[in-house]
Image 1 (cartoon, one colour):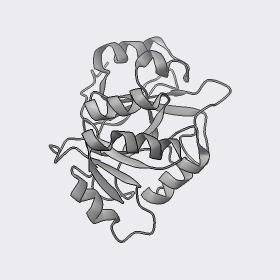
Image 2 (tube, helix red, strand yellow; image 1 turned 90 degrees about the vertical axis):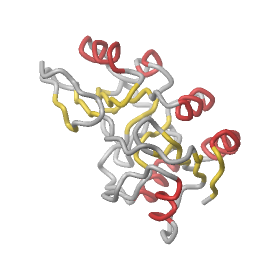
Image 3 (spheres, helix red, strand yellow; image 1 turned 135 degrees about the vertical axis):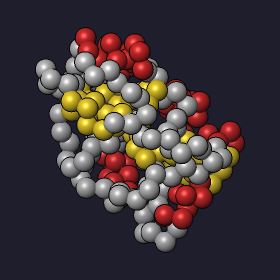
Image 4 (cartoon, helix red, strand yellow; image 1 turned 90 degrees about the horizontal axis):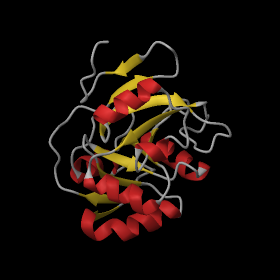
Length: 201
């Protein structure tokens, strides 16, 4: 588990991601894990590291809303939320377009949670990688969210599976996770209330 300052480690991070590895990096909420969502082996590795149930999908990080539209069945409600809150700490769940191109979990389903980050490191990583990455908190499933490289090291130092690289952006301010809203049905459903305060109607 290598640790490098974010500015110095970007090239190595991209190399690791392209070879199926997992990289931890800062986001606008906490540190998160990135892997290539087109690569089944990379996704399996991510789930092994997080010790996450295989039927609980991770979200996808996109460079822009327009890029996300290529992969999901977009709708008017999603557009309203995107116009107001993205980039930012909001996850919108929509149905994937067919054929399904991304693998949000080892037991793939038809839906996808999409994110567009406002954090400069996450933004640079996705822009330079050139295709969607996973975005999920860089912790063991059920453990506290990490706000520093030390938090990640403390959780994973003695684990069998660990991230390949941590891009260190220093200590982040403790921030609630992204708000998650499911728009796959006519009635929108807020699955998690987080950093983004959505209107009640």
